[in-house]
Image (cartoon, rainbow, N blue to C red; front, top):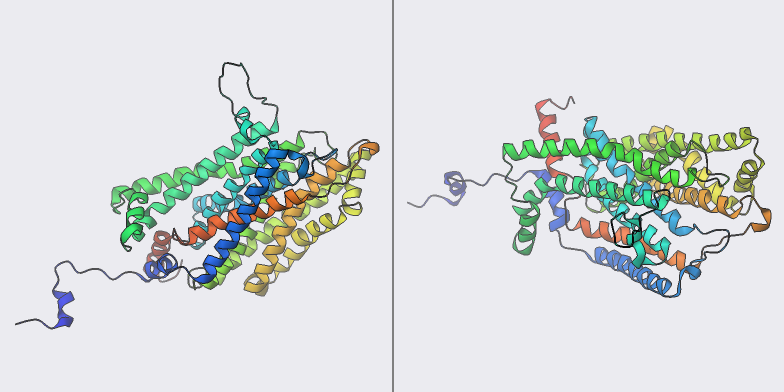
Length: 454
């Protein structure tokens, strides 16, 4: 007698367990076919990257003269972009590593996208020291290695410090990002077919979810978190010393290291929200990235904005209290000189508007948060522009003063850098789980076991 069709699954000796809702929801971002808007946005990003590559090739051929480099400003938009993108990469490590060490469970829904953002931002930043030196093929002079010519790097040069700091940070960030992805690649491997299954099989490194593998994985994440945490502080501190070790008015203050670190975390958190809010809405992930996460992120932005506002005020106080005329003039010109627009954008966007986040309703108001975070990122870009350009263009000798205006080549490469970053993130949306599935499932199990009390 043939059993009824409804009884067949129950009689199977190896019944397939029902997939969890978290697997279905989060993997749907990957498995769902690419939509027309996704292709359009990717196409725009590729177009932006293409025009920047063409401009870079032309600049490399004719020289840095087309980049607007002229006395007295020889550090310009490329260094502004380098500092900006390094700063963007800070929030990812803070969310992933530092909050992991503090056992902050709310990080689980946003840490994956923040880690991805960190890697892509640092990859973008790493381009700019090369672009800035002009002769790209001479980059190896920045790396210390024995050679027959007896040449050795100049360890007094901030460019060399950047090489060590950025490469260390980038290496740890990429390893940390990949290790966290391994269990999720295995989940994707077991639920896809064809070429995707083949690729995920390689990327998952034979992960089977055994207890020995979980122990090794948790231990590795813990150790990498311990390594990455001091790097958050060290990388941007090193970059701040690029400026603070000089004698240029407006640069040589001891507040630069904490000021730069706080600003980096501030801008990085804002960028995470700029990226995550559209992804959350488009892919229907409101159940995983909730108002609670937005509220916590907003609190971080409010805290770091207050630190930045304090640092801005202290810079003016230090200049006034120093009694040095060059310092006082430099800061007066920042606020009321030719770059006043950039300075006031920096102050209003970074120190004034974020104070609205004291109101709880605004901390979870999605449209308001998105607009505010876009303005914060504009303000953070202007912060670096003000620090670098205004000090260089008005140094000690008035006869050598100049007015710097970004050239078309610089604006073209600036646009290309944002497109480069966006291109990586858009591709990642279809390549890897945007939310850490295994961490979300662990959190769901924990909540069920404790009745939602934790």
